[in-house]
Amino acid sequence: MKQIVILGGGVCGRSVAEKLSVHINPKSITLVSEHAYYVKPFGEYFALQSKENSLELSHAKQEYALSYEKFASRLGINFLLRQAERIDFSSRVVFLRGKRVGFDYLVSCLGSAKESLGPAQYAMPMHSLVDALRVRNSVEFAIEQSSRSIKPHPVRIVVVGGGMRGVETIIALRELVKFICSKNGFSQGCVELVLLEAEGRLLHTYTAQSSEAMEQYIYRLGVNVQYYSEVTNVSESCITLKDGYTLMADVVIWAASSSGQKIDAEPDLSLSNSGRLLVNKKFQVRPYTNVFSIGDQAAPPFPHRLHTVENAEAEAQYVANIIPALMQNKRIISYTPLPKRSVTPLARNVALYIGRNFSSIGMLPDYYYRARQWLRAL
Ligand SMILES: Cc1cc2nc3c(=O)[nH]c(=O)nc-3n(C[C@H](O)[C@H](O)[C@H](O)COP(=O)(O)OP(=O)(O)OC[C@H]3O[C@@H](n4cnc5c(N)ncnc54)[C@H](O)[C@@H]3O)c2cc1C
Image (cartoon, rainbow, N blue to C red):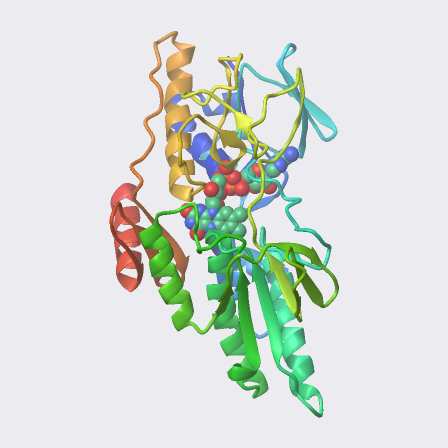
């Protein structure tokens, strides 16, 4: 029985496992994840803006996450709770922390690098449920501290990065601030939300129309957006920009772009300029026809490919279809990228629709997103 190992239990890892288990013997599939649970889509943002009085990790997990053990036993696949450390291509072995597994086919989907904390330890990341709770606590602490002082001072919360991650974070923060201010009897007007973007527009890797729609939406939320503001350093309470300008801040959240997650390999793997694994149009890691990389970790030769859940799932579907075909020595055709149309949920009941010539944000795109999810599930 040919062994298939899937590294990473994010969007791609789960999708590949789920789809492959339909085509081939599930017992030949091993999913490796460094976490025991996975966060449901946008769970971090829902946790960030939750109206719970003191949200504990255990409660957040129950609400916004699902266990891999249950997922694996439902599919009948093997699950290993380990961190992948190294791949040896000549002996077809993956070294996990404290264990090694052999493979005939390997799908690496380790996502984006987590060390994208930015230029300083004081900038908080927004990568996981734990990060979301940490940001939540810091915002709550800053507002409570000010509201309890004899002379309350304005609170400034800064998000670095105006990409999808940054705008989602600021939208969720707006809700959180509303909730915490009303709980503490603190004026919302005394909390300033600042979004720093290094380029001249938000969502700069998306269409100009989507940037415009996003800018209008963010403006209506009362967020102070500052363009051409590349952050070079963050200290305990001060942010320094490339042009030397400094900005005081009570809470800083790092949501700027990152590179692909790295893994040691023997022999070395070729990486793109942004540190992602170079793959061909079939997502194969050259020169190996049995090794694939998809999702945020991979750099296929498709211009303007976005790192979105929709693309990640489509790539997972493609790889799950071609592995069984390869096993039967069938010819496989290259992947056809999705059209540049997408719909992305941003917050509860709010989504962004990106079309060729038109973009929109609000409840309608959210209905459209849900309708599409529902149709796909049929
Ligand atoms: C904060 C944030 C917000 C986003 N918002 C949106 C959005 O609104 N809309 C949208 O469409 N897309 C969004 N994206 C992008 C989208 O989530 C990604 O494109 C998608 O998750 C990519 O899937 P993936 O499987 O490649 O990576 P991931 O889903 O990130 O999964 C990678 C997994 O690999 C695991 N891993 C990493 N290293 C190891 C190791 N050595 N051993 C074992 N496991 C390991 C990680 O823990 C993780 O679980 C967002 C991404 C982030 C980070």
